[in-house]
Image (cartoon, rainbow, N blue to C red):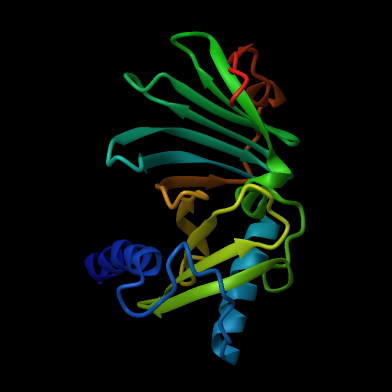
Length: 216
């Protein structure tokens, strides 16, 4: 049973973001009509996200180029997140509640983006209504798992987000960020601990801002 659920987890996310079974892809952002059961699943997912106070666990990330990285993550609601990548990946991603900082620790340089303009605000926000604040582009359900592909109506940077939720365990298992150019980054979560105490300093990061050219 666990193997079947894990298989669905992988296939559902892939199905949603490639449109293999007729679902829209990242270039066709149109809301779908949800059944009563589907709407309830989305509400349950939103209730879980809104109920998070703090999380700690491990993550595995697959980049748009297929590179695999691992590390540990911390989440403290509202707005705070830290993804600490294990070597040889030099990156550290931190959200302090307002800004998402991507730092290259090898070069001590980084860049920032407003959290409010990224899809991750839907995971880190204090009280999110997914049915009102997003366009639901696709949904797939099987084996107690629900995958929802959505687009933030308030987002200004473009892109979509796929959330994979285990309704049986009441636990977020995976998300896929699809940027405005269709590039996909998959993050799978494991060994999740809830309600943990986290030092606020974990969400503070110092860096030298990347110097951009006039055309950037």
